[in-house]
Amino acid sequence: MGARVNGLACMFLGTHIVGVDAKGRASVPAPFRALLKGGEDGRGRVYVWPSYRGPYLEGGDLGLLARYQTALAARGEFDDLRDDLDYAIFGEARALDLDETGRASLPEDLRAHAQLNGKAAFVGLSERFEIWSPALLEARIAEARAKAAEKRALLARSAS
Image: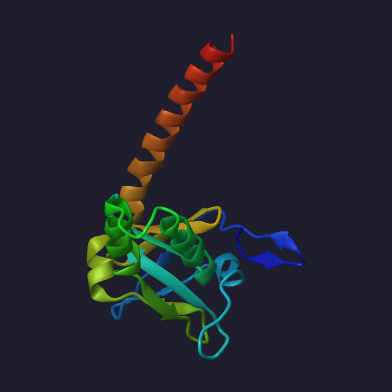
């Protein structure tokens, strides 16, 4: 379960294109900031790591990482997949505090992984979000739409 406001589950929604300045600072979209609690000063904290699935960053709140931890612990202490995901997620995750204007400083290695050059696209995906280069995101969205249309056709055939 994601963050909750007034007892209702909250979700990261929509795509938001933001600037990335020369120091690597990017404004976390306001709807996302509202879901990110914590940080040393209460302004918010975001957890981000390079995706092992492609040239983008994955992110969310501490609750997301806790859910991943629980799911991986269920696999058992000596599970190879658990070990790999521990390295790929927890070993590379960064806790980034938001400044007074809602910006987070993205370290150079994370910006390089996601090919962020002046712009970043924050994509809400329910309990988590991703940060993409806008150009690469366009291709990913086209791929996702095509796959969704194909799967929908397969579902429709199996239902008849």
